Length: 308
Image (tube, helix red, strand yellow):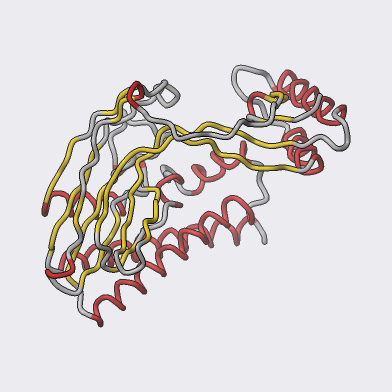
């Protein structure tokens, strides 16, 4: 795909996404609101994205205010939609749930709206991360050149739709992102970084190229059978626990945005729990199996190996 076609597709996709979100907002506002809870979290200002999190104070909002906050949150795609003081590198999270009444026809219509919105979000992510052909370090500049102010973390995030669960309870989760990689994939990633010929602060282009070259040589020096994996800690995340009595099963979902819950009438309103403040000193960890010893080989990529 030519760069001209890619940029045109990006604009078309974002415009369609904005129209879809606006249409969903209008549809939800027309439906009777049964119950809603939104939990606002402290805002993260520029320069504080990587601060260690020990406490998170939660503020609860109820009813129509919670619904309006949720709908505004779905539609927040650009920096212009938030304060200039806020970080654009940290996703704005608003856990919670809004439950609306929807008969069969409306439920089907809203379900299709959400499916279309989520498809556009996936399409946008694919355009930026795959079809652009750009390494991750070059995407920010590209995106903000053509879609000034787009907050990709918000734009990629899907809308989660549920149909009449029995209860929704909220909590916090600490976890690591773990991804197994082949040696060839890591070598290819580092070679792309070299070819991009870009620098990362505080290094000059020459210093950065030398650093990446050293990383490449490190990977090539590892035993052929060495196992490589990215193990990156993720900041504490709000989650929702969805319970359905019919199948006696609880499902845990990430909850960075309010869940949109459709109920046929007032008799199907789920029990909505609260999200309590997060306190790192009072986290109870479940039993964890002993992990295989690993060696950190490229700190900036959180890349580990079982052999040196």
